[in-house]
Image (cartoon, rainbow, N blue to C red; front, top):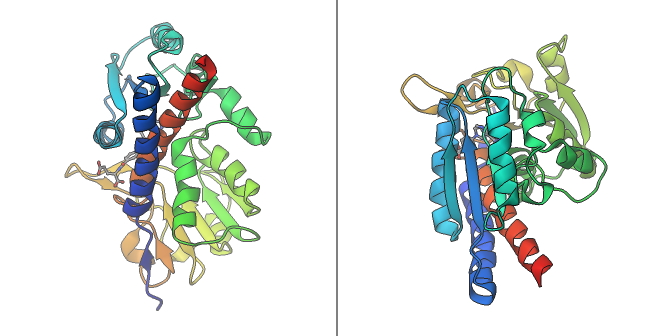
Length: 288
Ligand SMILES: Nc1nc(=O)c2c([nH]1)NC[C@@H]1CN(c3ccc(C(=O)N[C@@H](CCC(=O)O)C(=O)O)cc3)C=[N+]21
């Protein structure tokens, strides 16, 4: 049995929020501009509601203005696209995030093409993902970047290590694979059709669970001493959040595990604000 260390996100999130606050205060002081983030919500999804609440609270702490635009959960693609285009054209807006999931029949990647790349603080425009893949500057999706930031904050190295990413979504799995490759990790991306998931994850030094299935990863999926990052945010019946990792099962087998809540989530929120502060700072510099 090994002691399973909790990879907590509160401290790295506070550092990132302080950085965002410093940028925001300087922009207000020197240019009279407060960074502004707009969150577009067209879903009643419970884990999205958690995220929107934490963005709103954290933005207030970081001195960043934050508005929520609510559209009906049966909104048409054209209506969402029109809203995103208007925000892209509004010079008082520096960051735009379109929450997922989206109404049935609409595609996040397609709609996010209407977010101006310089305001695309959650890296959702396909141009941003393409630039990331090509090694060009772009905002990465905050959740994917949060996994790397959390590991960095806890002194866990990536170069040369085997990382199994469970989940191939456009918001987490795919961009995370690129971020990890940039850090010289050896990356395996697993998904619902992977023939032997336990074999793929069981030979990894680091396992990232981002499949959106509560309790998917158990001790049977891990090599002894593996480091586990839980990206899952599955709503529970009592109104809480639970991860993709069965924390009770992996305790004593994993060397480290990020908790849900309290792990990747707060870092995600803080990175979104840091991206917004950077976007505002570039917008102001561009106008001088
Ligand atoms: N375009 C898009 N990008 C996303 O990144 C995205 C999304 N859509 N849709 C919804 C899911 C869900 N998600 C969460 C992120 C942080 C917390 C979070 O901060 N949770 C806190 C608990 C809440 C709190 O303490 O306020 C924690 O884990 O400690 C939760 C959920 C991002 N998502």
